[in-house]
Amino acid sequence: MKYIITDTKLLELMSGYLDGQVVNNVSRVDSYILLFDKYNDDVNWDGILLEYDNNDGRLYIHNHFINDFYTIFPVGKDNLEEFIKDWFESRFHVKVNYVTLSS
Image (cartoon, rainbow, N blue to C red):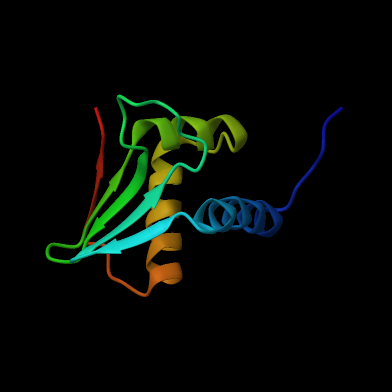
């Protein structure tokens, strides 16, 4: 079954997904804002999905997060990076100067 969703509704759904990831999963340490994966049980990974450095305005996005997000919202990974950047700036009232993806 196919559904037609307006761009506005899609953006609302994407924002809602990100907002749901933030609940009780954000830490502020020194000049950093860290968003953790609440479902992480891998001892070999620190579980950081997003990391913002206030000193240089860098937003680090873990590939795991982009890939999961892309699975749900296949709108293009470049579009997702820009959307996450804009959402982060709005949600945390900071300026993101550039985005870095994990390798």
